[in-house]
Length: 301
Image (cartoon, rainbow, N blue to C red; front, side):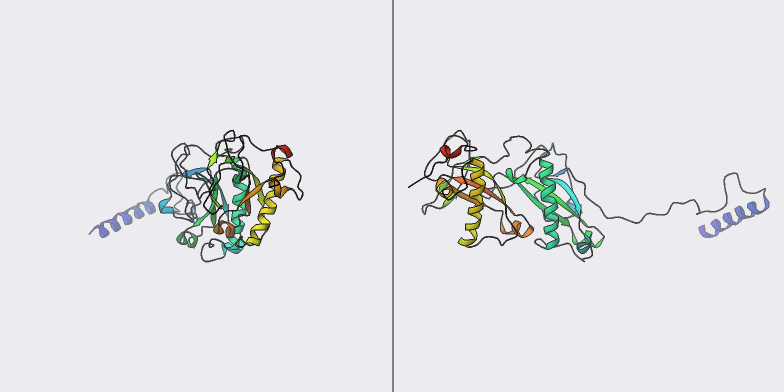
């Protein structure tokens, strides 16, 4: 009944249009020529410089995306959002962790994070990860990757994620509690390093962070001869830090702790190795930066 009534009304209007004096001013009778075309749907791209209350996840699902102001408690901060290159973009699924595509993304995140925090992020208690879209988002056209950074309680003893209430923007640009400094290394019953809790440099300690060695594209160390290269290069970092000669006596001035990221980070492309001087048999109550040969004398025994 409603359809019949509507047809009559349209017919009546048409009849009026045909018998009247024409269309009202500004009406041309064309129903569609002024409509804007409907834009093509575009995939969601997350913004940078936002924080997240949950822990880092390699796959970022839209259903769990709930950013917060960085002044609120959070555990992860997105410092940069990049786009995968053509080779990755043509794939039918997001790149897997450790793939060449993730290594390219990690290199971009590495650089972007250091710029964001104001110095090489490895100088502080920070960890960087690359998050990718979910398979469903990838199928819908998402080709972004997210560079997420997290403060950790320590980087030496497998520390956990710390909760923050401030952005990491320029957090390492000036000396801060985030910076790696001095440590009180403790050995186990076999003389191997057990733990290395942080210590104030003006209190008794036997180790100190000296800097970062950027390793070439080599295998992750698993054998003594692999570690030998790491220790040799880290000793050079220590020598420059303490301002002592980089000669054959350097090995008698200081022990060394070489700390790359884990194997998964290495596979992702993190080649930054943290280097620590280690006195082992003695304690000092000052920083040994620029201490010279007096601060790091040759140990003959």
